[in-house]
Length: 340
Image 1: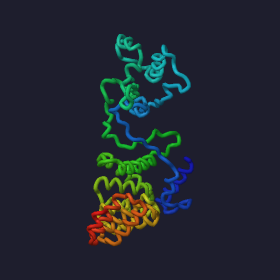
Image 2: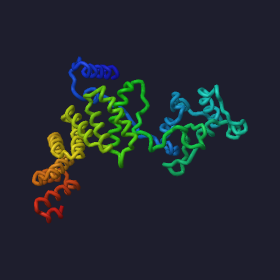
Image 3: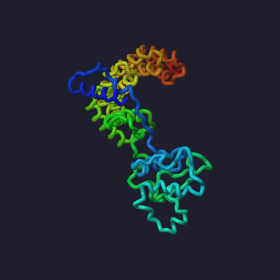
Image 4: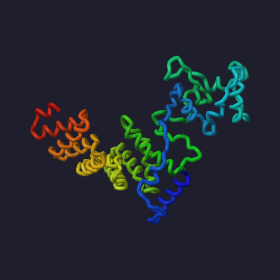
């Protein structure tokens, strides 16, 4: 997979620089062959979450030194009860042997000379009643709260890339993948997107698109990011580029319709929706969006027809009923409009 990906990307680079390629290039080809995994940003303020040990450990400085679960835990055996403290102390000293514990000997003995008892205390679980969770952040001073220099949960830029393995793509590709994931997360997330996240993602998108201008998914993500900032003009331009590169992509056409609506270009919105309906005639959402565009253009007859077609597919579509009501009212049938 690594070799295939490298060849694809080299081909794209040749296309960008010289206008030709050693293989037949189709927009989007290098990207939809691979999967990148991202996780929601962990909340550093909640160290008491059950089934969250891995996320907690990712916040530890020890993780940057290569610490993993199996650095301390043997999946096939466990230390005896009277050897637990010595076992985990030995694990800690594999990295901290030169600079050992600075606590007074009396304090260390009071805790059984256990690194875990001091730096990984057990706390009540915030997600499971009557359960305890070992704090795997491995804080230098557990009572001090969040590690110094760590951002608050609201400032963390979701999504977080899963720790790259030996087959991870090169850094510039991971940055590009992060932009696409951020665009999807912003679209799905409730409420306004964090301004800092959008700013960083747009900067990374600009870099990625300068390298790979034929990347429709990245153009679509850029459109979502511009929409999050209320920049309807740049959003429409980015969405248009995505739809031009992938004319049969429903997500790209959906983003184009959204951007055109924000920009007040309802003719372009209707055109994108017609293409969506042609690709997926049984999509009630596509037909309702088309009906919405037609009502914005005051084409009440066409809007009513599309709304009825959507309701024939999904009779319980509430927005379809609302759009139909608007069309009926505008066409002079207030009684039917009120019924809808």
